[in-house]
Image (cartoon, rainbow, N blue to C red; front, side):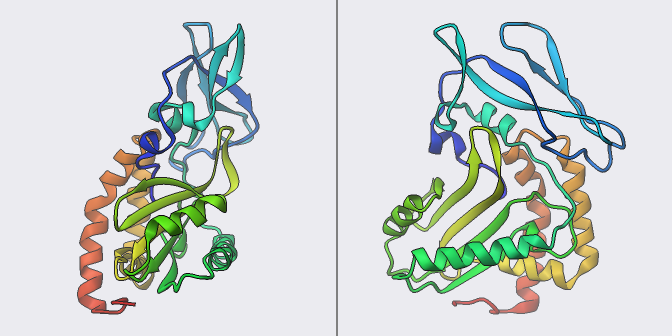
Length: 265
């Protein structure tokens, strides 16, 4: 999934307590359009003043952490205790230059998924999202689409994935979204979004192929994403929504050009 859609519902919204800005090593890169620095305001625990985290060149960064005041001491909150606003602060939108290693991440994780779902006849497993589009800036989060035949019970597959390290973030009868690599300290070294769908529910494959077959459109998509970064840095739903028209329009163009390339399986 492009954002942490449904995060509040999935991990639970704790009652708001005092957020604090803690110094940390370099966590997020500066935006390429900012040149020197990108500033964000925050609150220090127990104070009404402002801090800034900033980046650029060799400067340091500040990273958000959510803290509870317990017995007079500050204790880092668990993800399940954080509000949606705190989650978006902890897991902001940030884009980096394309990395070839994302293909390796996908291959290794897809192999691991096939092993834990050895009893499931997977129709198709695919690398989707911006990390699967050649050469463009993207969030360093690898999206994986797993399509299964309709006769399977998604809840049973969900249970297997959860036992094997995935967290279910949003779900209905025909779709389930999972993540892996979100911690109370921020992003892990590798982060994945897994999309479990019924076979044929795979618009992302058409969009991916259309971008890779049309580099000029991929460049337009990259520019759109970069233009939205600052505005929606801490609003993943807004970021995803602002891209939706471009994605929808080009997915339809792709389907007209490719026909039933990915249907039904």
